[in-house]
Image (spheres, rainbow, N blue to C red):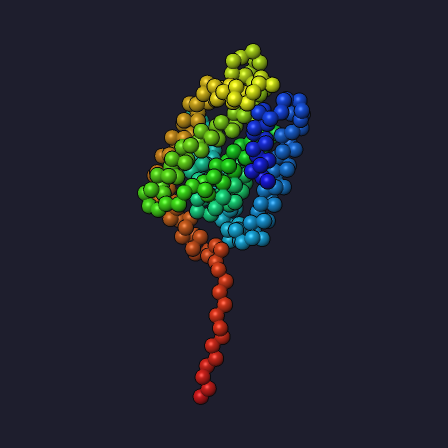
Length: 252
């Protein structure tokens, strides 16, 4: 449900015309609903055994780490230092953990930097999708795994930029522009305009993000994956419960 809400929040320009759902109150409403659903995701993961108390503590630690390192890049020239941890954590701990980490990392970062505002649901959803989809990367080991994650990290850099563009594209250009949003157009033509807008305005920034993700995952990926997996083993995330028969000492 949380992922579906995110898809609707981003792709509404292809589904409904502006004014059907007032833009002045939609973002705060989406933000509030998002926080409730993320809480439900955490509770459901705890109930089903996907996240236990130790994994919840890891979620808090990684959210704090991401919030602390994000200002080091802050998107300057597209350089983002937060995505490679989302990718690696989503890979090791699963899609539900990655989705929640993306939301909590951006929320904590906004609190630290004073970036809370009506725009917040969109980067939170964008990072949540990056972390969630990392959990679905095909299984591999060794260098092949790092190469797959690095390739996914590059793709996710472009994906994040495309999703964030959808949040303001319908309101940012003169309707007479050839790359502006125009209500009533068929989906294919509307999507072509959106792609043209993305290429014309943010391709350079998205490329910087993709290159940063690729380099960080290639350099730090093996060590970070080892640390995450060792932490999972030490904390015994999802440790199976086994019952053994009671042994009775022989009578003397």
